Length: 263
Length: 348
Image (cartoon, rainbow over all chains, first blue to last red; front, side):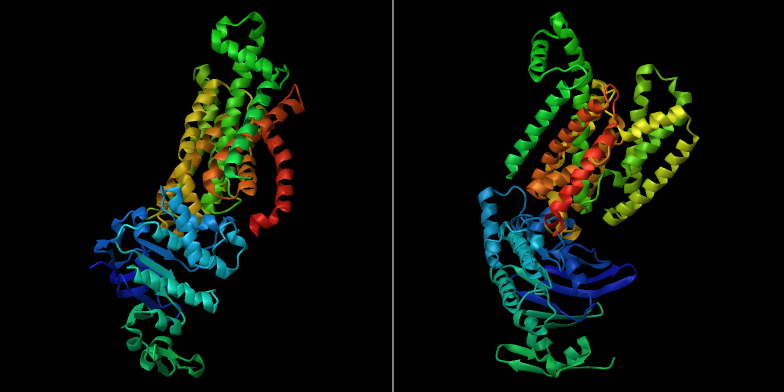
């Protein structure tokens, strides 16, 4: 069964273990969302799944093959990654930024179409000639999302492709937060797999097929949102007491009813 | 300006600079005359030239020809190396001197000038003249290899580490250079000083042939480098995510730049400023995408250096100014003016 899979992965940064024995499978057709407090190891786990960090123990496998066996260009056709902060060193235009994601040797017409579609998907149609350094933080974030989408759109070879998003909704207004999560959902519906790190627990519950909660480098709960978002799990993960409500669409919590627990 | 227009414009500029470099000098040879002599030489060979052309042919083929070729080669190498370094370090202030090439070359050069005397006269005269550039070349290359060795851990070259270690190695080499300068006699000092300010004087076809392969090596790598450097503007992680073999890119860039810069420094001394400024001039007009930036920078760098050399030859004729003085004196104020005028576009 195809998946992008972490098999009891541990990651060390310096002499600190930031991810410990984490097992997680991102499967085609599903949106997996990682939640947890700052420093829980979410981004490090995502980096290990992206191939940036090699696990000190365990293995990351893409469709059954070790990630380390792929060349960067092959990997780029199978998975794309949106990281938290991308600071451009030079004032590239938005069009040039999106093209950076395209694989080499793509026909001109195909490349143009992929760029145009990706920009339209993130609500930046027509923004191609603008300088990316003169944009707001949110617009720039969306331009980079378009780059990541173009990278995967340009490589349709029938095999499932994986989209890894590290806090894709940071810096975005509510409408664009929802639009970004809708893009993630469309990718899953089209047969791809999605892993997103989100801080907003309500957005996470709404977007996720599978919700994974991390704390101190370990996965402490995983499953459908309704199973993970419980009073007890929230208290254990965030050290916050809050009553989780249940709406017809799924669980939710109101931050104004929460109070911090003594550690 | 569109990119095709920029390439055309830069090529035209270089053509004008080449013509100027061939024509202007103590003996003026107009472009039409130069073409006539070259055409006659191509048709009949040097030996078959009419007597009235012999003097101009000697000037064109033996003096200005190699000088122009070497100038174009060195200018292109420095500008291209500067553009690649700026892209790789993601820093608009980077230039080849940052990776220790220039300081390593300078140290080796002064070591040869001061300490090499005892060995120098043992070499045949033809080799003796080449000993200084050859020493400088290996000095520059050795400094870069040492730097790459220091900055690489577990097969990964750390960019920030390269930058900082490059500064440290440069300071160390400068200390060694200073010590040797302190030990040097007056005549040795003069040779070294002239070399550090750069000059295309004494260019020969042999020097051109020695430098050309190293510069060509960097030039043929530009298509591979261009895509990678564009991606690395996103940061190393994002470049890897988009499919670039970042380690291979850094190795290719570092070695290519080191070889081309070492060859340039070895054949013309240390000429500042072109490597820093030429890529910026180009970025301001056509943007930072490296597919166009790299070739246009090379063309503009070649044209700039040839123009500077013409000025260096003419300003104090019959004496020659060091070319480094010209590039800095004319280039730096112009560059500052550009920066102030286009501040928003560069950093905004």
